[in-house]
Length: 327
Image (cartoon, rainbow, N blue to C red):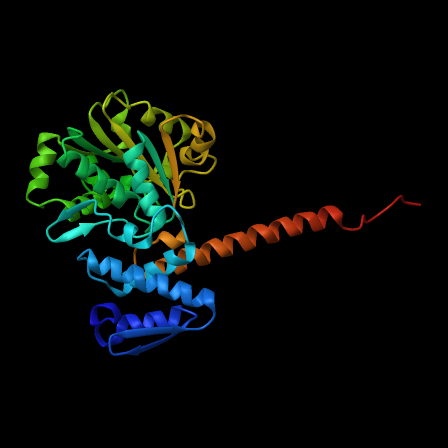
């Protein structure tokens, strides 16, 4: 019962706040009361919590909140417990696994397709999960190397103002990829793998003219590629390779007038076999819970501005015609 309700009833308080049913605990019995739908929802959440515990994975406040959210979605694809207990890789006592239904769909798509696009806002695990699948494929000897790349496009800054050589200037753009690698591999092994070329981290410009065989290739921050760069990158695909492209179309840092390759690629490739497009939303943010609220607030703000702009335009078109013939 302590495992289910949490230390000092931490999980019980979350359940009481989130569920419509009334929860009563006496000894080893939990009683739910309320309307039939609320009781069914609450019973489902408790059953999923117990299923997670039976797998040997402990519960946390974050896991309980995600179970509640996923029970609300009522998907037939997978139960919340199946989503939260699907292991990708384990490293130094830490197991990486999907935390939402959309993340599971994304991970499954990486298993099932050759080219995968993960599109969604910051913090939804697009790059992190792709990196975990790449490391898993390397460890299983499904590929011989991992290639990580991203465009070196300034987010309000200039490369020329950064100190050092070209590599020193580009390194800050590649740092998030290194950070993810350090979470998944023994830090002492990373320099050796980089030196041997088993893992390669390079700017997108370095991909031109290459054919990449037996590799797991990840293009990060793909919203900052032009349409021509996106085509160039996708045509690097060689035999025995897999490509994952990640990006957020709401955070484009390209110079004015340049169309993002990530924005147009779905309209071009949506009917091509063995290519999957996976979309994640603010509900899939796995950083601090405030990040999800920030993303949702910005989405609402932009939607309101777009509506107001349309209303103003329609008002100007339908407004009374002023003026007339002069006498």
